[in-house]
Image (cartoon, rainbow, N blue to C red; front, side, top):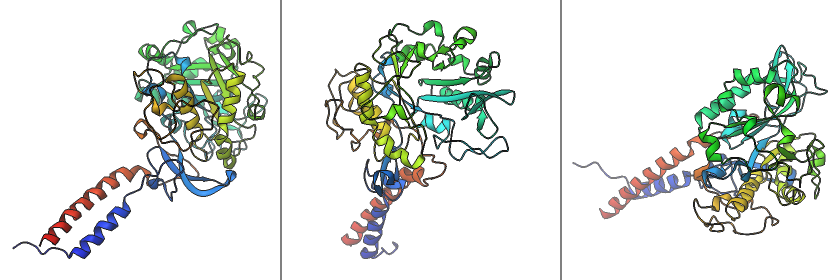
Amino acid sequence: MAPPLLPSSVLFLLHIALLLLVPCSAQVGGSCSSARDCGTGLYCGSCPAAGRTKPSCIRNLAIQPTSIVKGLPFNRYSWLVTHNSFSILGEPSRTGVERVTFYNQEDSVTNQLRNGVRGLMLDMYDFNDDVWLCHSLQGQCYNFTAFVPAVETLKEVEAFLSENPSEIVTIFIEDYVRSPMGLSKVFTAADLMKYWYPISEMPTNGKDWPSVTDMVAKNHRVLVFTSDASKEASEGIAYQWSYLLENESGDPGIVPGSCPNRKESQPLNSRSASLFLQNYFPTMPVQNEACKENSALPQMAQACYAAAGNRIPNFIAVNFYMRSDGGGVFDVQDRINGLTLCGCNTIAACQAGAPMGACKDTGAPNQTPWSSSSSSTSSVNGNVYSGTIEFKTHPTAGASNTSTWSSFALLLSLLLTVKLFASFMH
């Protein structure tokens, strides 16, 4: 004898309840109450500094341009850089003394790399008979300004590169190391020399860099630049301003409509170097203001583009990179790469192997001038994201299980629908 069927009214209510439990996957700017409400590559947050107190979905992951447009010279792409990547809010003291310094990021270097960051700014000092990452002053590291031995962070880079054999990471060292061969020793200890890009192959006089494809094939996947010119001769580490142009850092670099060059750099419109680093962060980092600051990046990117003689920034350095009121630094990077690499308004609209200007529909207007407003509400292709949210002070739980739960709920809902139909047939 067949088991009795549940009343159709009960089946119907179960069906509706399950459908309500399936996350809606809101896009950038959509309302949310948790990360489960947002689509892939987004988290749920707010930006009171910009007057946005209602939680909405905000981007936290980058699209790697080389995953779509391949084989171009390294200097044709734009990459995201974290300023003082090691200066992480909530990072416990390693010296036994409470730290007294400023903070610029809020997740681990490993997580930064997983979220699409491809450039790290690291301040290196002699400290405790070793090389440490330190956020200090006057070239001296103290126990209350020290973070971690540099080798530990560099080992995170090595682990990421080993796990991701087609990725390239650039490291900018603010260099206060005076111990003989100090930097060479720490990079060797981190097992990064196998990825080292040699100075002898770095282009000069503004020539193109090799293609990303060639760099990966040769395993030249770590570019290291130092602020100490003497290290080029003594340790074979590239002096930064021989190969890059750079705007002023700190407050002078975020004045609207202005983009002066850093004093160590050649003028931004010089053609003496083929890489351009754009700094975009205030002198005094404030976590709660970062969402507003990062959302204003499009205007500064336009100013620096003009100051550099219509040259794109290859590196964009920011504080608290995940903070914005919508698309933030990720949308700006997408826009620059899209317009430069394929003539589309976002890299998500580019098509591998397609001619310039052949853009797919992403829900955002294509082929618009760079000077137009940022596409903070455009949809993006979630399939190219990789990474996680890891705010140390504001954890967002439950996001990683969303896809599995959604699939289970939809399957169960389908089975209930069949059951409900069967009950009506009887």
